[in-house]
Image (cartoon, rainbow, N blue to C red; front, side):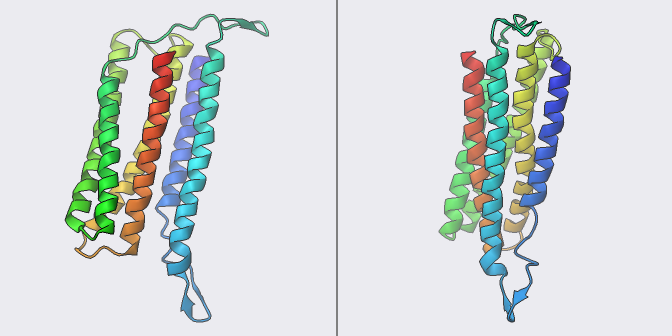
Length: 230
């Protein structure tokens, strides 16, 4: 049962990640057409991209909320409709998760500094902030992989008990969302590297990445707090 839940969750997470990456990397401001001879891309493109991001964040929030609710319900030490739920064995969270949390916080700070620097016209500082935000995120993912390895070395496999499965599912889904963000981040960094005069497209990309990084930090803090408290 645990493996089925984990498989379904990971497939759903991959689907959500793919749709997000496809939506956020679509250059809607480049091919919107004209109206009465006027180019409407400057008016509709950025607003459409920002709206798309916020819609996706709302969907992702509902997605994580459902898994959190399932996590809390599955912890119930009872028998429900003939199914014994008393097989829950808490997972001892690896200490590296604290380091990973600090890395994600640093990445979010780097993205925020990049966004502020770009608004002030400080192109080089914006590029450094963007690079730092992405590299810290990559380091976070590497740390999460090490946490998984440590758990497996200690005998905490996904099939062992529901708590193990939920740990891998929750952290895995968060990692998939971050991977999708890194794909968009790489395109934004490429735009910053093309010249010393960033255009509206670059400003929009940096802004969207910054919002997404802050969102994933918030989601991770909720998940980490949940895992620690239970």
